[in-house]
Structure formats: structure tokens, C-alpha cells
Image (cartoon, rainbow, N blue to C red; front, side, top):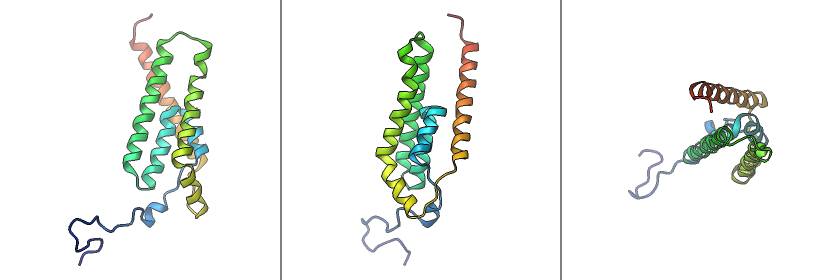
Length: 153
């Protein structure tokens, strides 16, 4: 008989939700997610959250995190490009980063802490910072290209 299959045809397969190989994948901490959101936009923070979701066997949540991070970053860039330079709007990216951290803490914080306490490794700070800065550079280059292609206001 095949493993993971039962005699009941309507029963779900009996597979573990998270394999040992998946548990070896390190996780980003909430502080790394926050740093990513500050340095590389909410997209970077959501990318780190998505990688955590994938490492813990939740691909649908990973997709949703990337989608929401992309929308938040596009909205921030649009607001920053269209609206005039107003002092109160300059804190909007920091506010978005704080919101990203709050979401990360509420969605993943307890699970990250528990799994790190059980011996799972955390991702390297160098990797988190490098990836965040790479995303920031890509966004700056994209905005620069967009500014060159649009007529003067």
C-alpha cells in the first residue's frame, strides 16, 4: 500500500504539513522584516514574510503577502510621485514600514519565536540588508527611468 493514502477515498492524504527539509530553511525575524520594509519598501518586508510563509508550508499566504506588499509599494510610489512635497506626507513610508512590522508580528511573530526556540535558524542579517538595498536600488532605477520617460510637469 502507498504511504500517505488511506482506505477512505474521501480522506485527505496523511502527509506532514512541514517536512524536516523545510524546517531546515531559516526564517526572517520580525525585526528583519521591519528593516526590509524601512530600507527596501513594504515590498521587501512582504517578500521576507512570503519566504517565511513558504518555509512553513503556507504558499497561499506567501502569494497574498507579495500581492499586498506590491500594492502598498505601488501606492506609496504613486502618492509620492503625484502629490506635491508636503511635510506630513514624508512620514508615509515610515508609517507603511511600521504597519508592515505590526502585520508581521501579528501574523508570524509567535511562530517565528517558537521555531527559533526549537532550534530553527534565522536568516542572516547581511542577506536581509543586502536584499533590501537591492530592492531599493531597483525601485530607484525604475523611478528614474519613469521620470525620464514622462514629460515635464
